[in-house]
Image 1 (cartoon, rainbow, N blue to C red):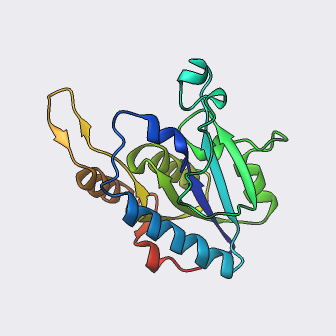
Image 2: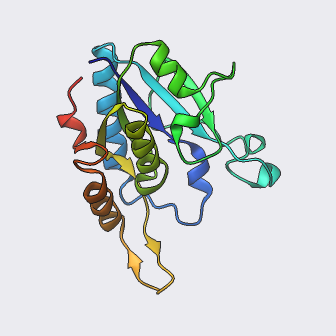
Length: 186
């Protein structure tokens, strides 16, 4: 079954958000880089998706004008294709020539996606659900995703670990096979 590795929103924009934390970052980069390297060696296409937002000018770290919509420097990646999105799902991403990620995957005969990136419970989880609904087999490399604590309206703080546990709970056996990066078959 042909697969592609999706590297979602692993971009410098996040360094400029108030919730950024380095706490889980080294482990995340190690897991993701290992998977990128394994996919490269196995000739599994590596696809990079960036999140962009209009508005806010250079002050918005997700605006192309900010200069931060680019790969985090700790990651060494040579993607076979690059897409840009302005919504949560990477499947809506478009290449420079306007081709959607979904179209690119189908054109290449790819029917399985491996989800990695930032943020676990947001763009990564949304992309996994969307890809599954489109008929792709989805492998979610949980430790090759990164997120940050969140505060609910009630005031309860949800740790990054709790958010990852929730993502694993809601995706497993419904939308994706959730595994550690080292367990991903390439």
